[in-house]
Each structure stands twice: as structure tokens, then as C-alpha cells.
Image 1 (cartoon, rainbow, N blue to C red):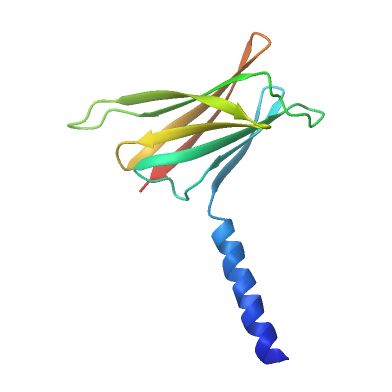
Image 2 (image 1 turned 30 degrees about the vertical axis):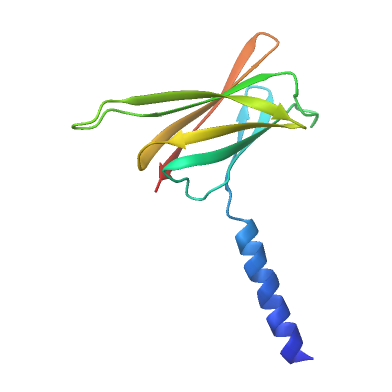
Length: 129
């Protein structure tokens, strides 16, 4: 029995680690709880899929917002500042966007949520490889 149980447990452990590869940020933005997931951890040069879940204080999904992802890298010697923006589209109860990072290094990310005329923002930094 032990000969079967150990390999099965190892398989589940490896599968669990593989599923946990998303980069995830949980933050409060004004009155909202926001969970941002990037499909690669760490994010990579090129396309990265971003999922954003916005819930209000009672846990209801805010599906009537405009959500945008702004990502930037400050100027460095020999390289100008880079600033990009992509609008997220609502799919079921999450907002989805693609973030195309052109170079490796530290990126400032701002997820902007506009709802009922108010803007709330979640900010964080990623280090793209």
C-alpha cells in the first residue's frame, strides 16, 4: 500500500505546485477588494494574461466597472521611460487583459477601477524575467 500512496501523494504535490504558478496580488482599493492574477510567476517579457476580480464590501462582484491596467518602467541610462495601458474586458465575474512587457526588469503596475464616477487604484511592482 505504501508503494502506491507515496507516488500518488508526490503526483498531487507536483500538480498543486504547477497550479500555484500565478503571480497574485490582493489589495484594497477604496471600498473594493481586488485580486489581480498574472498567469506567469514571475511575469515574463512578452504576453502575460491578467485576471482582475473586484468585489465590494459585501463580497458581491462589481461587474459594472471600467477596469484598465497601466504598466510603466521609469527611464534608465540609455533607455527612455515606457508607459502602456490596456483596457480589461469583463468575462463572467472577472476582468481580463493582456499585458505585453517589452523588456525584463521592474515594472510599476496600476489597476484602475472606475465605477459610479469614482476611480480606485491598486498599485504594485513586478520584476519581469
